[in-house]
Image 1 (cartoon, one colour):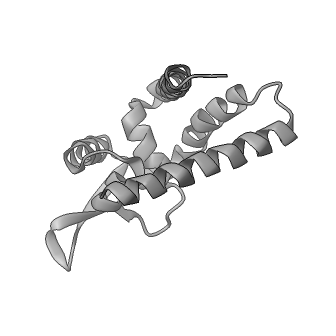
Image 2 (tube, rainbow, N blue to C red):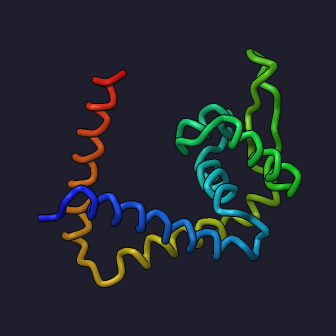
Length: 147
């Protein structure tokens, strides 16, 4: 039976490798992995997202999101607009440059997915997905208990 240290090591290793692949794939676009993560989330939101929502979805600090969004704006991939209901907050939307690069950005993330699932049967992928969903549900329930 796998112990917690082995499971933890595997999860961390998977995430580290996935980040490295994404970073490598995005270098040609002058993007970091963190910038790619934000763009990847924005690609599927036609109205953009608030910086706060990006921080929540990516589970990173608001300051880190702010720095990364600023860098993306400097590179011409996003534009920020002050939110009318809170002048301190920004809403982030893709520029034409980002939309033009969207295929390459998506391919970077698909490369991770395709590599990870190589030679794994679809039934096994479904089982792993179901197991991970249950693990996530269990952990979120525990997280709510300790709040």
